[in-house]
Amino acid sequence: MLPDGTPIEQLLSQRQTVKSQIAAVGDMRPGSLVERHRKCGKPNCHCAKHGAQGHGPDWILTREVNGKTVTRAVPGGSAVQQTRAQIEEYKRFRELIRELIQVNERICDLRLRQPDAAAPSGDKKNRTRRRVPR
Image (tube, rainbow, N blue to C red):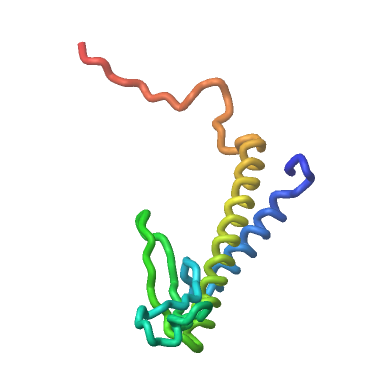
């Protein structure tokens, strides 16, 4: 048992539950989805008027790849909802991984405190004699 009274069986069960939840994770992707409005630059366009919102919305998915920011346009409509759901699923996945690591650390700590049943008994170690050439 851990100092807080948690038995190892409970931790092993908790770990298995988290693994099952990870296995059930659906489509996911990292990043942020941003709604963007832009001005086209034509002086007679409605977007050029003071206070106008601009053209759009355009949806942009932004994420980091190898230290660089990568953006990708996402079509409007149902693709925006799908992308939002995928991002949320990624956040859930990260949380589950964090939880799995915490449970595993507790299991490892508990096992370190238990006497090692596999240790050889007696004072002698498993030694083999080496032949020394004469």
